Amino acid sequence: MGRRTSAGKEAGLRAIADVRGVIAALAIDQRAALRTLFAKAMGCEPERVPADKLVQFKEAVSRILTPHASSILLDPEYGLGAAKQRAISAGLLLAYEQTGHEGAARMPRLLDGWSARRLVDSGANGIKLLLYYSTLDLPDVNDGKQAFVERVGAECAEVDIPFFLELVTYAHGVADKSAELARLKPSVVAGAMREFSNDRYQVDVLKVGVPVDLTHVEGAPAAAADKTIVYRREEAIECYRRAAEAAAEVPFVYLSEGVSNETFQFGLELAAQAGVKFSGILCGRATWKDGVPVFVEKGERALEDWLEQDGVRNIKSLDRHLQHAAPWFAGCEARG
Figure 1 (tube, rainbow, N blue to C red):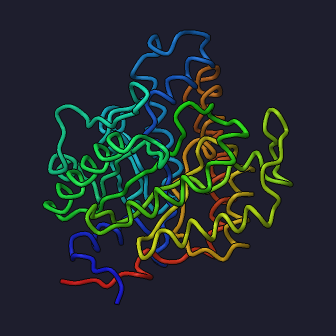
Figure 2: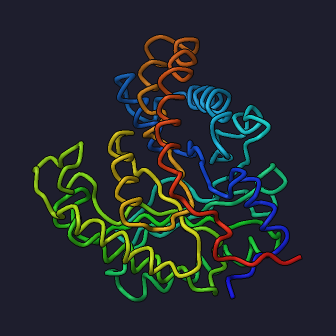
């Protein structure tokens, strides 16, 4: 028997997914990362980027791209205006965590002044929590993070709304994007997926990066800075299978982790070759990040033109890779 899903959570998941039950979602809940992109284009420090520029950008992305997505992930700090401008057919996910992290432990923090109930009252069909997690971290660090996720899972269950857990994996003391981290990533991703598939967390969908560093895969369109090949293609495909098995019956979707659209497509091709039953994607920067300098340099009308052409093309190029995805309810049993 599959996992049971409550009536409220089922309704939320159906709103977030397409008619097939596959999640083809657009992510633009970035805050610090979006500020950094703007700062680079503006030639200033991130803290000098006006908040209204972030709001305007999110609104344009939502207005023009959500007709081509099953749902959109936004933040309640800068994204509520964008939520109101989404297509009527698009569901709404709202982020619950504060942006970024502090300290080596990378402990999560919730947004001040918000609760699961308040996110629902703001129109959310689902709630997302981002968690930095490493199976290689100290037991007391991970125990604290696990308890934190349990509390958020219980809060989402109380208001009967789907809980999406985004897992960002790392290894303490190992440089991001390094060949060393690439070698560790498959086991860390699989271990995190195995842990949070446990019923105690009440997670409805796992949002994860692909279980390899795509820039270190043989034949990848974008090579790592040091051009080190960590995985042969067949090795990478086997990593996908092991991670998928670790998720048990919890549906999972892939996030783009800031890579280019072309590189993310390559990652989805590997997933298809591996035969894993992922339930869709939640893709952000690979779809819209190149629109930031257009907006900064030429204004909102130019951004809208870019989104209508390049942005729509980006999102449709990814959707073509979802023919191999499985519906979120493949391992679930709904209940009234």
